[in-house]
Length: 141
Length: 222
Length: 183
Ligand SMILES: Nc1nc2c(ncn2[C@@H]2O[C@H](COP(=O)(O)OP(=O)(O)O)[C@@H](O)[C@H]2O)c(=O)[nH]1
Ligand SMILES: [Mg+2]
Image (tube, rainbow over all chains, first blue to last red; front, side, top):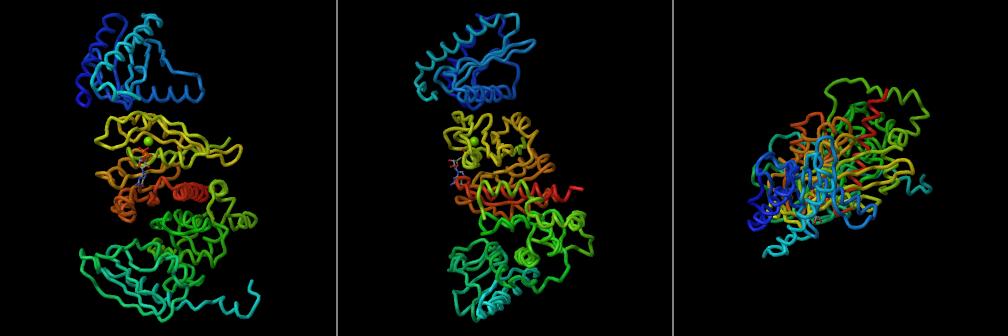
């Protein structure tokens, strides 16, 4: 299920542009999903694939648990969540100060450093795009 | 326990007032048609109990219920199903009322409709967040939730004395919260086990309810 | 170290997070996120992974309280959390559209916990919606789950005293059951 209908079309458009740009820059990117904090999918690239919203919910739980750990250990501002597996790496990052999170799956032939740079560039672009939206101020923490 | 002659008299309080109400309630529970019970006493405002919706109305809060009301008369009348009486008054759920009447009606004697040695098991939990109750009463109700027991066995498993266990059975029975065993039943195995270990029987309240006891110690509750 | 894992389950807005923070000894661990479903339940934030609280019964005995997210889309968290649980508190929001359906859905989903330990049902928001009554819920539970005999209480999760009653009954049930099963 795509939940795009519940979000501001301008946010969906900005997300689409940012995710497409990341895809163009990162050949190892398999899937990128922009999710709301409470686990709904705003937009994804490529535009097909998993359709039940399960990944979005899981990504939101993972993000929240990671931030709970950061808070518990008092280790400062959170940056990225990295889940490394034999045939894929998931990197998650909150769009700074916003109630949306980017979660991206890369193939392992892409270096971790490059993946991180790709994700960081994308969330920065998203932040700039959201700031320019009339609804931007409501997409904050 | 009682020092003076005067308090000895109170050892067996005259509970005839609530006793007659309890008996009427119990027999009304067996009737198939919806009934309204009205209790009039020289000491307090009239009390209405509507069995069709399981509610009562009394101007008096239950905390001000007299232990021995004087001059009690009980009236009952059939009412129309689906057309509850006196819709303009603030009716309240019946459980707390019956729990309290059950406490006073028979003291620690057996309720008139119960027979010695009958076994009872819980069939529904009273709404304990709305009913004043003790730690011992929670233990007894939880025990009845798992087997058919006599008052004596209930006391044995929970570390209570038999009269106290009988009183809890009276209260639950008046509420329709326990059911009698359909026929003769052997006691559950745990009863023989506890009987065989008198040491354990004496400490049944803590040895059989360790988790519960430690939780009550920690969180409070009488 | 003895531990008793107890889950608090129920639909969004029932009062699970409120209940866990009222009962816990420690600062609870929360995973609240901005709620974008204000049309479903009008509250600012919602739990997306778990709530966690602890009650220390003694230096080597703890109750671990886990609150689950209420929405079905987080059911993977339900599967993770239910594995170690010996008991659960089901909270039902009485002013929701279909509170009886909610109770049945969560009872079904977590029935293995009932089979293993204890279940207590708490009807919240009954100050706003008095019906269905605890009596009506008990009849439904008795019909659907004849072996369950689950206690159904009204509870306001903002009241610690009422929550203590629920937790006490859960513990007494776990003990009583163990007593009857012991040989
Ligand atoms: N009026 C009323 N409010 C309640 C009751 N129980 C919980 N609340 C409120 O309902 C809101 C939702 O509670 P929350 O703990 O976030 O629910 P959760 O989604 O189950 O975690 C909070 O603002 C509570 O204070 C109740 O019985 N009555
Ligand atoms: Mg919550």
